[in-house]
Length: 574
Image (cartoon, rainbow, N blue to C red):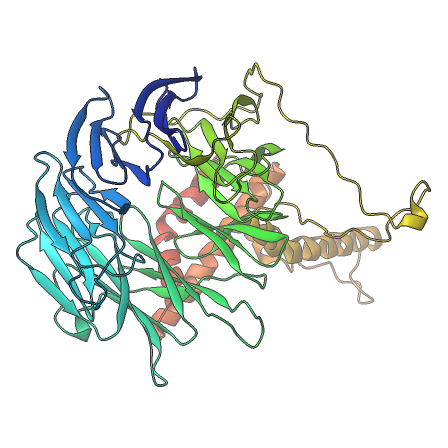
């Protein structure tokens, strides 16, 4: 099943079939005007809208029939509500020569009837769009020093208000009820900035917040919710700092249970990209001076897997959450890597040069890259790929024309199921571009000779499983002590005595005496590890009885005691 791709450029707006079975011939031309400013799909892909200089059109994406033509000029951006019942449009705010008489520029349209539900004045384009809950029960927007909330798309009545002095922005989680809302308030006069998380509609006073995180170094804040609305990652940025002209960045984690912590990043430098897994159990962060590091973190903010370093500044999960793309676009050369997240294994690695746009196909197997204007006015095109590195289509824009925007049509959640990851390249009728190895710079006097650079510009770190490393580090002292014990026993056996006293060698290894060998080294190792964990749990119990407050991870460890005991009994009986 192939879904369509929408393209906007100097030739208007048109639709083509995506992959597999791509055909560059347009299946429908929506508009041939050169004044198309923006376009948008609804969340489930059933509706498609675009704006020209004097009108907005809403089309059925399946039958390609225009449902509504809205008489609205100068529309610069638009967005559908989650269920596609409301279309929000925004245009630049204009006044007359005297600075008076500005008309509302944020319009909420009823998709079914084409009528205006409500209009507002929204002067700034930053954070212009209203935010809905996933079921459209709650809708909110920022107005001066408060957040206003409407219910069931009734925009005539403000149901709730959250007043926060100097509130800058907010973010509504897309999870089911109860609805979670995070709000960012900028600090002033020595007071810290903070982000508070509220459960709608409980806004009564500072104690109503279910979670709170404050910080001093923050000129800008970006908030990233997972899809279930239970965890929030906060990126704070400063305009400049003593250590860097470009400012400092920091990453914080907050959960709706009230837990918060600093996400540990072990390399200095900017944070380029943050992405939650569609499975909501982990998130990926790209950070550090080039070559940047890429790390997976779990919901306890513990690093799970390190992808090493490389020329990367973007990460993209496929819709099913089993494949991760790491890429270096923009001012980087366009290197692309795909990883199997279950096996923690690299699938493919190749180059997609001059990429300015990246989209996963809803099937989770194909993806789209494009070079669009005005970012790059030369070589505008779009390409379709398979994640194994096979190039399936390359469609350049005709001479004299430009490509401005490309979007892959979304589909309802659950349409495409997760498939097993393949490593063999998919079949392609197009030769993939060769990844030519660029040579290092040679000074003029060394050209044509056997000159070899003294050192590489960058030494890339390989990928590593952090959990396995931690386990190996924990096992090192035990294995070292075991070698010493074995050597001592061998010497005692050879001499028949211990030391100079002529006494038999005692059993100084209590754990070895308590756990005789089963004959299987792997099983013996598992038994030792389980006994060690149970001993740690016993110590934690004693600390808890003495009145010491345990950390969250320690309490989680106590809950695993029954499972560990059962696993140990099964191994010993087996």
